[in-house]
Structure formats: C-alpha cells, structure tokens
Amino acid sequence: MFSRRLIIRAAQFSTSQSKKTEKLWENPWKHALHQQEQPRTSAKVLEVPIDWSYVERLMPIEIIPDVPKHETYPTPSGWTPPTEAAKTHSYYVRRRRDHMLPLYLERKRDLLNEKTLDFDYVELVVLRNVDGNIFDCENELRQFVEAQLDHPIATHVDELKGRIKIKGAPRKIIEQFLYSKGF
Amino acid sequence: MSQALRSAKERALQIVEQASKIRIQDARDNLGARTSGRQVRKANNQMGHTQGALERAAKPPLGWIWGDFFRPWQRMFPGEKHFNADINVRREYIPLSLIELTRLIDLGWIDPSKPIDISTLCRTQKFQINPNIRQYGFDLTEEGADSFPYAIDIEVQYATQSAIAAVEKAGGRIRTSYYDVNALEAAIDPKKWFEKGNVVPQRKAPPKTLIGYYMDAKNRGYLADESDIENNRINLANIRGYKLPDHEMVTEPLKTVDQVFHGIPAGSVISLADKKLYSPTNEIHREYYSKQVADKQYS
Image 1: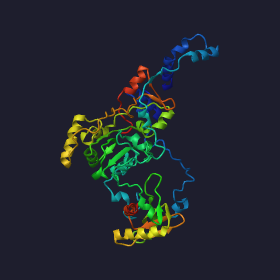
Image 2 (image 1 turned 90 degrees about the horizontal axis):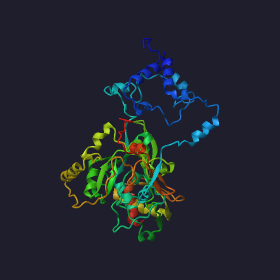
Image 3 (image 1 turned 180 degrees about the vertical axis):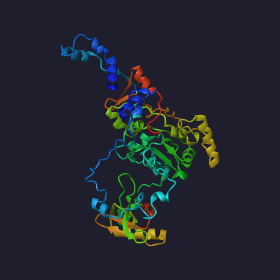
Image 4 (image 1 turned 135 degrees about the horizontal axis):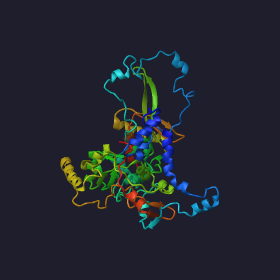
C-alpha cells in the first residue's frame, strides 16, 4: 500500500518526462550537447577591491619575528636580551631560536609509593645549550639557587649534550640565575 | 491508513509526513555517530586484558569501576544520575593568560596596534585549536593581570572579570564573541581555507545556552548594547578601584556580529595567487550570506 503511494507521488514529479515525445536514447548526442550548452550554475562573481593588508595579517607567521625595540629592559613580561656580561664567563648559554631561554620542564616517574600504591613523580628542569665549561656553570647555578631556596638541590651534568638537569628548584629561579649572568 | 504499521522505517516516514516543518539540522548525525578514530576489530582488541584473564578473575560487583572494592562507584555517588553526561557537548576553551599575551607582544609575534582575535593568535602557530573536539576558542585568564601594560583591542570567547579589568585598565577594549564550528575552522587557519577555495563563512548567532553570556554587558559580550558595555566598564573601574584613561585609545570599528575576518565580507572568495576578492552577484547567494542564523547544532 505504502509503495503504491510512493509510485503515485513519483509520477507527479515526473510529468515533464512523460510529455516528451522523443526518447532519450533515440539521439543521445543531441541530449548531451544540449545539456552542455545550458548554463550549469547561476553563481556569477564580481571582483571587489580589497585592502590586501587585511588578508596579509591573517597569514601564518613562518619566520620567527625580530624582537621590537623596547625602551627599557626587562620588558613587561620579564624578558631581557642577552648582554655583554654573558661573554665574561667560562661558559655560555645560547638562547633558543625564538629568543627565549633554553629551559625545559620534565616529569619522570619515581618509585612506587607503598602507602598509597601510586607512583611518585619527580619534576626536573633541564637547562640546555650550555657551551664551554659546563661544570663551572653547574657550580654557580647551584650556589645561586641554594642561596635563594635554603635547601640543597640535585643536579646532573651531561657534558656531551651540554645539558644540566636540576631537581628541586623551580624554573623561575633558574631563569633569574641566567638573567643575572647576562645570558 | 487502516492497516497497522509494521516497520520503524514506516513509522519514521509517517512522522516526517505529519511534521509541520523539517529543517536541515533534523537530518544531522547523532552525537558520536561518526568517529575519527580507528575501530579495532573485536577479536584483536584486548583493552589491557586477555580473555583468559577475564574468565579466571574474581568478578567485582556490578557497577564497580576502580578504587574501593566494597564501595562501588554508584554507591559512593548516589546522587549523580548522569556522570559526565554532557561530555559530548561540553565546550572547551584554550586558556590564554595575560602574561602569555604580554610575552607574545614583547617578542613581536602580535602587533598590539591591530585588533587581536582568534586568527591573530593562531597565526603565531603557538596554539592548537581543534573544533572537531569541541574546542571553541580562547579563554583569557588573569595571570599577569597586575602588570598588563598594552592598550589592545582583543576578542576572545571567554574572559574572567579580572582579565577584563586588566585590559580595560590599560586602556584596551575587550569583547567576548562566539564562533560556530565552521567560522572557527576558517578563523584558525585562513590560509588553508582560502587555498581550498572555500567561501568566507558568516558567523552564526550563539546557541541558546550561550546567548545569555554573550548578551551580558558584564562579560563584554558582542551582542550586548554598546551603551550598556560603557556603563559596565565605568562600573567595573569603580568596583575594582582603578582609573580609566581619559581618552579612547582604541578607535577602530568593531567587527559586525556575523563577520569572521576584519575587512572581508561574508560570502566572498579570496584568491591568494591573484590577490583578488570575488563576491557573488546572484541575489539569492547574497541573501544567503547576509542572513542571520542561529547555531543550532549543539544546544
């Protein structure tokens, strides 16, 4: 019953086809060519003048931009460029490509806590890009940080990669140390 | 129809026939109908267990998920009828603190003299927003609010009162505005959008659960009255006890409520190679891209 109804409806929509006297397959070429001549879309466009700077400011930044000139340093967010004082030490800490300090956070799994049966985690700060005498750097860093924190910290020096891992000190204090040395 | 209907298909068709109005969003997928993840075959998927382990193990009481064996979850939280029931429709906003914003401006990633919106923030390539997992934009948080120096014109999707106060104290202008999924996708990566040849979309009005937020002048919503916002701005300065700057520092006009990009009308196509903008001439197409529609995809 339902299907009959559908058929009746379909017939209503396809009245135009039944009126045609010539069948499609009698001359398919004519039909195809006729179709091609018809405009397929009513979408026409008009070129509109535009201030292209509006589009340019949307494009992704592909090269790290130069830091603009600031009147005073540190800048409002606490950033300082490397100074001449940095060259007076026996070691040198290179900046990252994006002008930031090479400080990274790392979280490693420690031993299983037997009371809570959860793993403890240690939070480390990794200082990278250290050139020259890395052990001098580690000594001075340790003195600076321990004077600030009043407790000993643990460090691990990877001379080959030029990295120092620090346990027990927040990144902010290590940042202060690097800025105080002029890096 | 005298004969009793048999299949669900027939019943569905009857509902459709009797319905007064059918919209395109009625035909959308159910939530979670399509997934982007790979479906592991059932035989291979052990999910951290093996079949044998399951068979031999002592079974926990029904409803027990993890934790105390003798206090299953549904007895610990008896009032929670639908735990995480809205997880599929919850919106996520990427936090952007004021100190991060200051740092981006300091290092030249963002130009404070130009209006800042999602596109400006995303073109630094330091944020990832994925609209497919219901991330809806940025949330401006108040870290660094004590010393925020730049008078900026910023548009975010959510902002705390402290962040609003900090921006306005410095002489800036802040608006919270809604981007629907399509507009957000265009705003996140305009280059990709233009290269595909997609039409610049028009921003839909927020869904009904969010319209209150964006019409509230307290939140500096983009649908609120400008006079209300001005009153609220003065009011917030009085409450928080700071002095607003005497003259307007930001004078550029705001985006219209359905505009995605500054200076680019909806419905146009941009050719990056030719540096040209084309807009439709057909009246139907023009009307389609100037019509205000609500985002009814999610409530």
